[in-house]
Length: 212
Image (cartoon, rainbow, N blue to C red; front, side, top):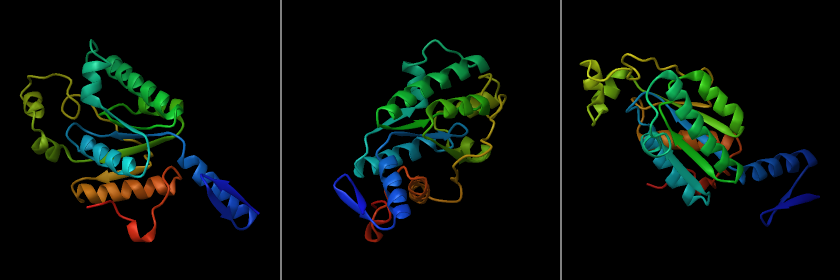
């Protein structure tokens, strides 16, 4: 007895065949990886690393960068709570469409408010929230645009982490502490979690880490 998926024959006990088949079938479906965290936490860096690796593994991948989407998809929106939530809903809508059509959508957006992130999660279903946890001081040091400096000087109002709140996820699928590990280490942990969740097929023992 057994099943054939993508030309691969899966055999064994009925329960093991069912489990293997469900994992393999799920890995062919689209899903969304949503990176959230303070400005300059490292979201975009990790999103691009993940996209490159998943592309190598044969997945169709789209990266949705928060800054680019602000310019293209949400032009005209401001930075009130209502506008921020609307921006995230729009990003979530795009992710939902991509996920529905079998693509891996990787969003890198500050998305500071927990309620709208949970709303987006509920709408997508296949949703993996990655909290990029980085201290405010480190984010300030990494900020090449100098936005934190302007916010601290009062030149920018409503800046997340300075005078506007960031609400960390209550139960993310994974928390990445960028101050304690290198980006490649974080990437490995993200891939391992996606494998555990059944979204990504594990590699063989001889190629279990991302390419250097």
